[in-house]
Image 1 (cartoon, rainbow, N blue to C red):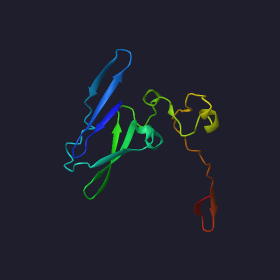
Image 2: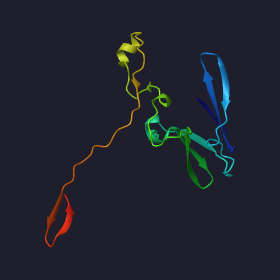
Image 3: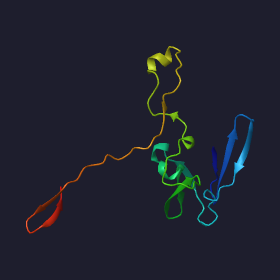
Image 4: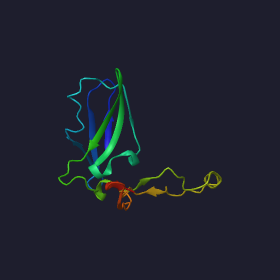
Length: 141
């Protein structure tokens, strides 16, 4: 996906590359269109993919600077079953960890980047036991 954000505009254009057919086409997703917001953005920045709410099919999150503050813009893919993790929305992307040392790179070595696969982190379930103490008050431990 390619996001085009223009300074002093109220919309974000989204394009998709189809590498098999060799074409680019526009995605017309109303979630990305900011027509309802009359504040014009002065500049934009994207957050890392790891900041997205993956269980809600959020594929990108960006901040835009507007008069009077900063606004968060979330780009979600419309899905019927939420919350749910859709692996096809999150292909592996380059991680923040280097794939080789500076010395090796200076010697001409060129390694592919380390890739990171986003996956849902399920919360650990803590077992809570119920006990009765003093005047039959119910307490959780």
